[in-house]
Image 1 (spheres, one colour):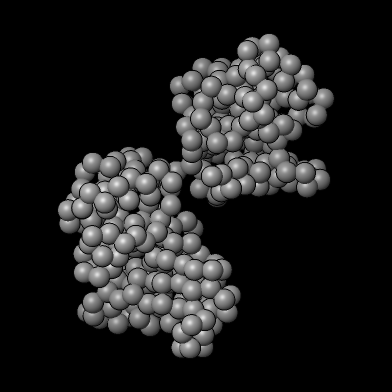
Image 2: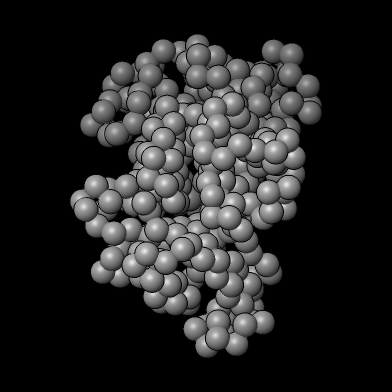
Length: 231
Length: 105
């Protein structure tokens, strides 16, 4: 692997750009495509350009047969994101586990007593209202949103905003009864049944989780299934 | 450690003046433990970080990596049940995997 391409890869990655590194397996040449436009190294045939585009879209590395022969496309998309609403006890278990899974995590909680750096070291914490924060953070297809506060004043605006996004996972903690009430309120805000079906509530796989760490495992397992099993 | 971070490891090792080889899973068939894009990083003394299998073919990949670091061209290795030698090194999961091994230069 060319050292200059490795350095450019790491630089582009730190700028949250979409990177595809190409290895031409027959000729041992290489190329690097950043954000679908900037191409370094060997030039690409139109069919190979299309393959790069598809690989980035599907977030899947793999080998293709192109005019250039067999080519391995290594896709390096920006990290998955997790937006956590509520700097509660469960967040303290969820955040480090999500970091370990490779998510870039942001915690949103306007209650400054909860959302402190002592309790949640190493992640950005926002103190604005969840709907404003989510609007600003623009959840995309590689973003998960989880609400943990059990407080409709905080959870509802976050869910309202998340439903307007392409987030691949939306989870809301709370009992079945709490969730029923939540769905009624969101219906009143204009969300139909199909939209509401996107919310995993109560969030998490049913594994009988009790402790905050166990609940975090169940939520992250459900999130992983939503990510990996989709189309 | 995820596979993107392994590239950072490769860069750091190189920055320390170590010889570095990068092994990459480029294709898989059937059941194989690590997906395409998985990396094993090897230095000139055979120290490793990351993985290209569940641990069964890493030894063979390191041997090839040492040769590539000694100046031989990159190579594409295939391991699987159809390959007797690979069976000996033990990809017992029944899958097949292709690993590209190259020096960082």
